[in-house]
Image (cartoon, rainbow, N blue to C red):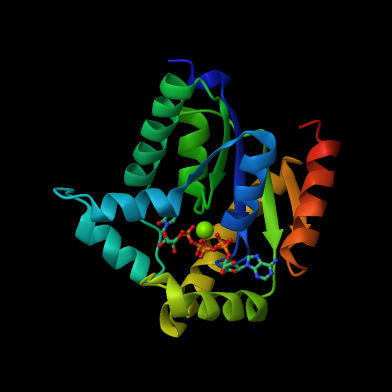
Length: 196
Ligand code: UP5
Ligand code: MG
């Protein structure tokens, strides 16, 4: 169905490292389609009649990775719909893959990634950002207890994915501690070097 010709960049980084924020900049300036796996899961969770709603709610609150069948299917549907509707084939897949099985499955069944944009950020900084956002976000996982679990999952389950792509020379690493503007400057510079 032509998904094979899509250009896919994975965007990874710990919870609160700034993935969504920087993806919005890239959409504005480069015309990417932004697909956040977390946003797709939250949408599915709230979709009336979804058979996965309760399961997703539980996993997200606990900072655990939803079984990949659900997430890969949501992403594949969104990619297909985008290609059909706006002919856009440039994708930022945000917050995915965060477990090895998802990485292997997606690249086999949908499309290999060009590279992974990785936001490197210490936990203290991420925690402060998330607690701050939690005052208004309404996200069920922006509280101290869930944040702790999200960090643990990130280190144990998601970092191996980054290391896997790193071994293939397919990681673009950006320090995410500076201001939004400074971080974005670095992203642009490195995208330039990659010919994007
Ligand atoms: N902010 C951003 N950049 C800043 C900067 N440079 N300086 C100061 N402040 C900055 O940013 C977070 C906050 O920090 C915002 O208030 C922002 O203004 C500020 P944001 O851009 O939202 O960071 P992001 O990395 O996108 O943080 P997010 O909380 O979305 O990351 P998560 O990875 O935790 O969340 P996601 O939505 O991807 O996943 C949620 C859950 O879904 C997971 O825990 C998991 O349970 C589930 N999930 C799966 O199961 N499978 C998947 O494949 C994906 C998700
Ligand atoms: Mg996000």
